[in-house]
Length: 394
Image (cartoon, rainbow, N blue to C red):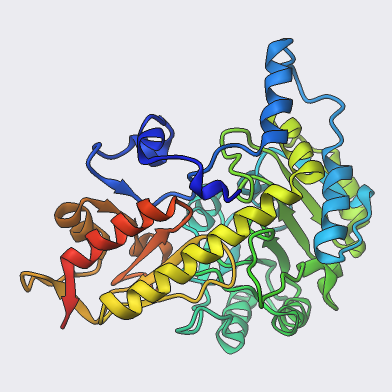
C-alpha cells in the first residue's frame, strides 16, 4: 500500500512536529522535509518493543553499520568495507566534524547553490568560510564554475606560494530540485578536487529516494572518490527525523585519517535512531518501494499541474527527493502585486499554503520557493489549487 495514502488531513493536523505545528490550522504546510506517512511497520514494531521494556539507554548492539553495508550493496551495488564506516549523530554533525578535522577556521568550504540552507549556517557557525559555486539553470553541476570556486578557495594567501586547504560539500541527490548527479559528473568533480587538494564530503541523505530512469552513484565509488567522505542516513527515506542516526563512510585512501578521527570526541546516534535505522535498512525494502511509487506519482501530478494551471511557473524535474524547486519569475499575484524575491511570503499570506523561502538556499534563490510533495495526493491537490488561486502569468 502507498504510505502516502494512509493518513487523512485530520490525522496529519493532529501531529505536533515542526511541519504541522508551525503555522495556523488553516495553512497547508508544504515546506520542511518531513513526509506525511506513518512509520513502516517493521520500524514501528521494533520501537514499540524497545519502549515497552524500557530499552531506552545508550546505543548498544543494534548492527546499524552492517545493515547499512548490506543495504548499499542491494540497492546500488556499492561494496562498502564496514571498517570504513563510523556511526554519527546526524548528517549535519558528520559533515561539520569532517570539515573541522580537515579545514582550519577561516579556510573555505565550497557549496553548490542553491542548496540546503544548513550547508551554510552550520559551517559558518563552525568558523569556516562558505563560497558558492552556482549550479546551472537546470540545477546541474557547473564544472567550470566549480573549478573557479575551488581555485579561488585554495589560492595561496598573501606572501605564500602554497595553496590553502579547502573543502567541497556536495549534495547528491541535490536539495532542492532532486538532481541526481551522474557518474561522469562525479568523476569530473573528483578530478577537480584531487587537482586542488580539496576534501570532498558528499551528503547522500536522499540517496534511497531516486525515481525510475535515474540512478544514484555513491561519490566514493567513482574514480578519484577514494580520497573523499560520504554521509548517509535512513532518516529522509524512512521519515525518521525525530530519531537521528547517520553513517560517515570514508574512501579507501582515508583509512589512516579515519583512525585519527576515531580518537577524537564525536557525536553518536541516539539509541532509538540506531534501532530505527537498523530495521529500516534490514526490513524496509518493500515499504520503500511502495513509497517511491507514490512519490513519483505525486511528482508527475505536480509537473502536470504546473504545466496546465500555472503559466509562468517552472518546476524542477526531480529525478530524486520529494523537494521540488519552483521558479515564479514569470508570474505576479492575481491582483497584479509583484511577488518580489520571496514568492513563498505571498503564497502564505494570500493562499494559506506554506513553502520554503527561496533566498534561504543561497545564490539563485530569489524568485523561487521549495515545495515538499511527500504528502497525500488530496493534500497535494489542495495545496496546488491554493497556489493557482494566488499567481498568474505576467
